[in-house]
Amino acid sequence: MTVRTPKSLEPGKVDAQESARALRRIKDYLATHPGTEDVRVTGELVGDEALVLPRDVVTMLAYMLAQLAEGRGVTAMPSHAELTTRQAADILNVSRPYLIGLLEAGKIPYRLVGRHRRVLFEDLMAYKQRSDVESGRAADDLIALSEDLDLY
Image 1 (cartoon, rainbow, N blue to C red):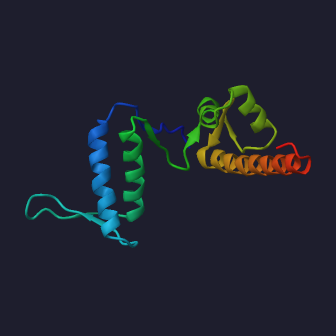
Image 2 (cartoon, rainbow, N blue to C red):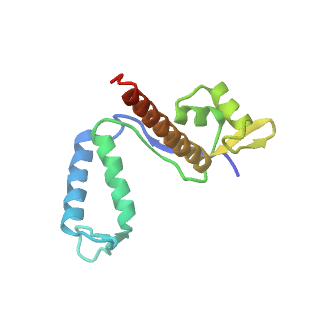
Image 3 (cartoon, rainbow, N blue to C red):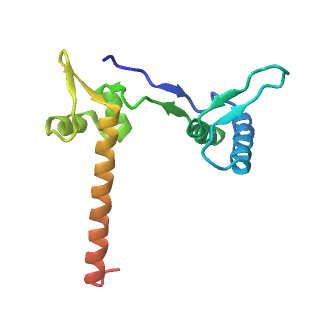
């Protein structure tokens, strides 16, 4: 496997008003055509074949357009993408040395390419999900303890 560069749109790269208009049209379509069927996108010229998109793809596109309409950037990354330690640390919003500690402690799987570590995006997201669950439990425990001690 090779390191794959995510596909990104930086903030402001796409016109926010155009994104908002497209988002409204997609939302209107999805609201008036509920269900799980594919979405047919037709051209304006007679004889053009309709473009058929899976509904989940259209929903994802709507989410991306919502972010762009708010002036935020968007990145699409395949779940099997390999990340450098810098990219993985940035996604988790931690320092690179902290991430390397997680890797060496076995909390996130990785592989060596020469002497460089590579982390699968899906493994990174699995760790993040586990970490978020543990953080939620710890917060619940603290709330229960503060209520038991009448500290609220």
